[in-house]
Amino acid sequence: MPIYVYGCTSCGDKMDISHQMGENPLTCPVCNSENTLERDYTTSFSLNKKASKGKAPVGQIVRDFIENTKEEVYREKENLLREKYDD
Image (cartoon, rainbow, N blue to C red; front, side, top):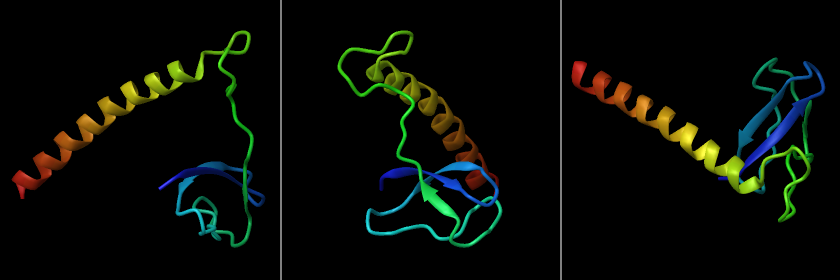
């Protein structure tokens, strides 16, 4: 499922929400206000082939994210395995 960035007009918090393309989240997971989420269409990186001045190329950002996520997934997997065998 794709991940979308939303901002809450009530509490002002921004969050990543994963949902199917046809769905629209209605309730803010932070403040529980209804009908206050607005999709944020801005991006913090350049989508051009050449990187903008002072910004990392998109490919490098993705590689860094994957590396960081691998470590988190590995730790979570280890925790879940420990919990499974401790029970």
